[in-house]
Image (cartoon, rainbow, N blue to C red; front, side, top):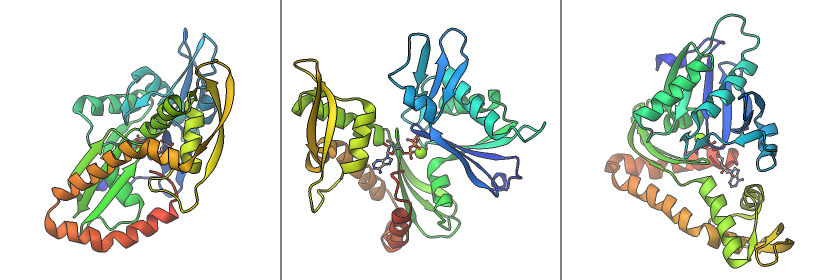
Length: 297
Ligand SMILES: Nc1ncnc2c1ncn2[C@@H]1O[C@H](COP(=O)(O)OP(=O)(O)OP(=O)(O)O)[C@@H](O)[C@H]1O
Ligand SMILES: [Mg+2]
């Protein structure tokens, strides 16, 4: 993988559905903010991006559009992606003088050729000199310190915002992989639907995500957690405050989580037996990494 031996002017970009991360070799991650951009409707001028734009979601006046330009891990709004990328590349390369950066971008393993071209074009038109794509599970494996070149199987499960990537890696390549378009955003959506159906209240995406992060669980906690949430009563239309428990959140997300587990099982089923047994042996080092990086994704 020669292209990873970058000089200091080269960037690594994780263009995620939920968050965008930029790293420079030798310096590590220099930018980590939500993948959101706020644009003036008439002039396409970028008003804000990242954290500032996320705070504007659902709160903009008529003249401004706050957009999450990526959906299911790929570009859903090309213009907005380009504008967001350009602003970020300009910010992080402002000291680069004349030389345009070379860029490596992580993409979901299930991406189509058309989607690949869209990512490449967005980076080129944002000021990149050359663009290389790397499949996200490979990037995740390298980032987690797995010795990818060894003839030993390791499984990567990356639950992002839009996609869950499941891959088995050995000898520097992906042996089997599955890219599911069910991930964190779907779990947030499940919570919104649950409160509508069982608590008769409408809540926003930000509230639902907070619920997920604070009391969400795939298996019931030993002690049930509770959270007071605010939303709109669906019968009266008025603001309302109610309580939701971790058990309810677990129930809300169960179907989606089962689909993710099914994806992992299906990937294991098509993994050659030698590698499948490596994964069982290697799993401790992976879960150690997982607990260090106490983040979903
Ligand atoms: N503590 C947490 N508990 C549960 N979910 C979390 C937690 N922290 C973050 N998330 C969820 O993880 C998702 C974001 O993960 P990540 O930043 O890896 O996604 P991404 O790389 O932008 O997306 P993708 O790879 O699908 O394009 C969001 O849905 C967010 O709500
Ligand atoms: Mg990701």
